[in-house]
Amino acid sequence: MDEKIRIGVSSCLLGNSVRYDGGHQHDPYITGTLGRYFEFVPVCPEVECGLPVPREAMRLQGDPNSPRLVTFRTGIDHTDRLLAWARRRVAELEGEDLHGFIFKSKSPSSGMERVKVYIGDGQPSRVGVGLFAREFMRRFPLLPVEDEGRLHDVGLRENFIERLFASGRWRRLKNDGASRGGLVAFHAAHKLQLMAHSEKHYRALGRLVGGVAERQLAEVVKEYEQTFFTAMALGSTVKKNCNVLQHMMGYFKKILSADEKKELLELIDRYRAGWLPLLVPLTLLRHYVRKYGVEYLAGQTYLEPHPLELKLRNHA
Image (cartoon, rainbow, N blue to C red; front, side):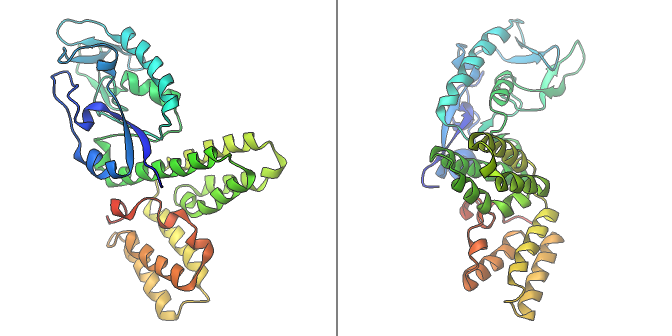
């Protein structure tokens, strides 16, 4: 991508001192590593809705599907105040060209899942969603979202960042007008990437694009977007990636020598067994793509869905 991709981030994760105790939760991976590729739009629900810093700590209580936001010590209910602000804020964020959001984990306003909810007089259950996070995800159901805690999981981190870059490419297509030819080219470039996430959705999108000339383009684009990002939200697995690697290998069956095929199959098997990262067989395949000029594979986003510098495919 020529320009940084804009994403929303809970303000405290950027090092801003907005937490209830006057501190922050600076995450150096977000500001350092991801900051080279993403432009951040900070959001702090509590401060932006008018609460001071520092302030009394709050918690969710009551019905997990419609909890109240109440201060711990004095029992002041800030639910209506924060929800009114949240609905205005998500409407404003539609104009910010966001491609995703990184929330603060466990926060009663910004946690995207497993937030403590106090039900009755018993122990809290981790079944809640922060009030702002819920409004955001309801307004933007297709946008990739994560919290900083889950980004420590290498699989979740790769999937989230992969979806962000896919969102950037899709948004660029739409901004350029999303012609029929552009949609066909976009789909052609993402075929293997889609296959690594969901073969079912990959085939459905193939049928959709195949009939693009017979339907209103705006309808096809809308349906494609929904199906594409639903597919991308499904994590790739070792089994799915091996299927794609073997599919790619098929393009070289008349080109590679017996020893080259054996070596490639051995690398794929070692990746399948968990002894090697995906990067290893992919690096050899990329070498063959360049060496033998296989144009179809050269144009596949699967080969480099995100910058190599992020090292997202380096783990076994």
